Amino acid sequence: MTDDAVAGTRAAGVSARSEAIYQELILDHYRSPRNRSVLNDADVTITHRNPLCGDELIVYLAMDGTTVREARFTGQGCAISQAAASMLTGALRGGSVDDARVILASYSSMMHGDPASRDDPTLGELRALAGVARLPARVKCALLPADAFSRALDQFEERARS
Amino acid sequence: MHRSDFPLLAASPGLHYLDSAATTQKPAVVLDAMREFYETSNANPHRGAYELSGRATDRYQAARERVARFFGLGDPDCLIFTRGTTEALNLVAQAWGRRELEPRDEVVITAMDHHANFVPWQQIAIATGARLRICELTPDGRLDMDHMRELIGPRTRVVAFPHVSNALGTVNPVADIVALARDAGALTVCDGAQAAPHMPVHFDTLGVDLYAFSGHKICGPMGIGGLLGRRTVLESLPPWQHGGDMIQVVQDEFSSWNVLPHKFEAGTPNVADAVGLAAAVEYVDGIGLDTILAHERHLLALATDRLAAMDGLTIYGPPAAERSGVLSFTMADVHPHDLATILDADGVCIRAGHHCAQPLMRRLHVPATARASFYLYNDESDVDALMRGLQRAAALFAVAGSASD
Ligand SMILES: Cc1ncc(COP(=O)(O)O)c(C=O)c1O
Image: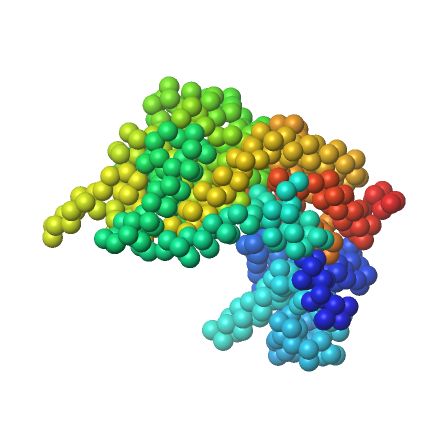
C-alpha cells in the first residue's frame, strides 16, 4: 500500500492492513523458534519485561573471549517479540561483541523508521520485521529482545572490565 | 443505534470501536456544551466579583447538580469532582487511610480490582502497617463470597471493591458486601468506573459510603469524574490537597477548611469538563440506562455465542447474561497483542493486555487477554467485524481446526 493510500484509509478510521507484517518468515520463527531453550553455561542471563503487556523474555549469552558463542532465549510473548528474539539469536551468534552492537543499533534504527537500515544486509532475516516500524503500538514488542540482548552485552562488558 | 450522534464514529464508517470500557466516544452535544461554556461563560468560578465569574460559578454548580441527579445523590454537595476514578480512590486512601489505619487493622480489596483501587490501598497498608487482605475469585470469575465472609471481621476497617470488573465484566453483589462490612463497622468504598456507564446507579440507596467514577467512560470528556459520599463520612475526612478555594481562614500558624464540596476541590476547578459531563449524563439519561444495558446484553450474548463456537477460544468471566458489556478472551497460540493488530487491519479496535489488573491476570494464569467491550453506539455489524477478524487471525496463525472458513 502506498503512503497516500495508508493516509486515506487512516482518515476513514481504518488503519493500514497492519496484518501485512505477519509474513510467513515471522510466523515460522514464532511457530518454530530457533535457540529457544535455557542455556545452562550462560555467562550472562537477563530477564526483561514489557510492562505494557506483561510479557517476559529471558536471554542468555555464552561467550568465547569476545565472541558470542551461544545466544538463546526463553519466555513467552507475541509473534513479533518471539520472532525477533529467534532471529536475533541467529544474527548475534558467532560474531564479536562489536558486531552484535552494530546489528542491534541498526535493528533499533530500523524500528524507529530509518529507511537505510531496512536495506542493511547485516540484519539478514531481521529485515522481515521492518513493517513493525509502521505500528507504533508494536515497536516495543520488536525491541523487547533487542533491549534484553543489549543489556546482556552491557553486563558482559562491565564484568570484563572489573 | 445513535452512531450519528458521535462525530468521530459518523466520520469513520469503517471503524468498529469495541474499546468503550477504556473510554467511550463523545457525542456532539458534549463537545458543543464545552465549547459553548468557553464561548459564553468562561471565568474563574468563585473568585471574581463580576457577573461573568458568577455565570461560570452557576454553570459549575448546575453541572454538579445534574451529575448528582444522574447518580441518585440527593445532596449535590456530596459529589466531589476529581480527575476521575483514580484520583477519587487515591483521595480516599490518602485522606482516610493515613489518619485511620494502624498496624493490625485490615484492609479488604479483591483479586479483580483495577490497579486504581488495588495499588492505593496496597501502598497505604504498607505505609501504615495495616494488613492487606485480598478476596479471591471463583473459577468463573466472581467474587468468592465465602472468602469475603471469612475475611471481613472485627479488624476490618475498610472494604474497597469494584462494582463491575473492567477485565471480566462481572457485576458484584454490592448489597451483600455492604451488609458484611456494616456488621464489621468497616467503611465501604466502591469503584464504579465500569458500572456508572452501563446501569442505573442510585447512590442514596446503594448503601456504600463512597463511590468513585470516571466521566470519560460515560460519554463525557477526559479529565473529570468524581467521588460520591455520605455527608457524615465526607465531613469526617481531612482534606488531601491544599490550596485555593478549599480553605476558610488561613492564619500564619494554621488554616481551617471550607465546607463540602470545596474542602476536597483545591485550586481552579475543571468547569468546562464538568459542563461536558453534565451534558453527557443528560444524553445518556435521554436514551435510558435500562435501554443501554439491554442493548449491550444483546450484543454481548450474540458475540459470546459466536466466539464460544470457535475452536481454540477461551472466554473469561461469568455467563454473558450476568456480565456488563465486556468480553474477555484468548485464542490458543495467538497472543492478544497479535489479535489486536490483525483486528486493527479491519478497523476493529479491541484492547489487548493486562487491563490494569495484573493480580487478576496471575490468577487466570495468562499474561494478557483480548477484550472487546460494547456500548450504546455498537451494533451487530461490529460483532460481525469482530468475528471476521478473529477468523482471519485463526487462519493466519493456522489455529487447529478453525481455519475452515
Ligand atoms: C474498574 C476501573 N477502575 C478504575 C479505572 C480508572 O479510571 P481512570 O483511569 O479514569 O481514573 C478504570 C478505567 O480505566 C476501571 O475500569
